[in-house]
Image (tube, rainbow, N blue to C red; front, side, top):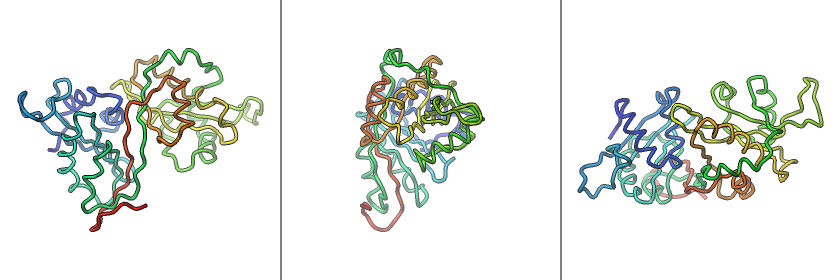
Amino acid sequence: MRLNKSDRKAIETFLNGNPYLHLYAIGDLDKRFFPYTQWYGSRTVSIDSTTPADSAGSGLSAVICIYTGGNSPTLMALAGEEGTEAVGKLLEEVIPLQPDTIQAHLSPGLETHFEQGWLIKSKTPHYKMALTNPEALDKIDTSAAVRLGQDDIPQLLELYEKSYPGNWFEPGMLRINSYCGIRDTENIDRTGDGRLIAAAGTHVYSPGHRAAALGNITVLPELRGCGLGTVVTAALAEQLYAEGLKIGLNVKTGNEAAVAAYRKAGFSVHTIFNECIMKRTADKQIDE
């Protein structure tokens, strides 16, 4: 069933039952993003029901969030081990309401609900990692990292063009999110600053909901393998942890170098999910 603004507290309570699974959805509860979301949920029937128990008294057994603020809607249907059946049932209600093309973040197995009448254009496994060992941050020298601001946008765009083309970054993110970078201090440009050689930012930054998800982390290709990714990640995580936020990130399971860097910075794998692109079709197939 469709949830509305009056259900916001119940939604937050449910999501915080497994915050590292739902960090992105928690961030979408922020007043800046909530108007661009649609929420669906299953109510807990009763304490004796076969429906999985709700999360921390929220009255909900499953929640699906759809973010509509991007180029195409992103559907998030994620479940812990005990909630997959409930989310799957809710997904069956939500799928017919979707446009012809969507992005989806799905717990493993939930993509089967799209087999009838949808083309799965891509399915890429990702880890959700969580900062579970913040003590590791104390062992990393982050003195080379600096906080980035509006004046750094040109250099940041140049860095992403060279090292992370196609990433999701908009200049406005620097006004509301936290970003750190590392400069090449051995080669100073005419502004008096060295060029950016590494950067890390946040896809989710919501102090009000105590949630942050790191993203847009990159290092110039020719400088990878030197530990800069670990340093810039640790610098930003250190700052956010000091603000009392729960911190996580998404990373492709096949990106072994990035996963190793994040582990050094105190992150561990919380769960796995599939990032999919779906297109409505009369045929049932997966595009290889």
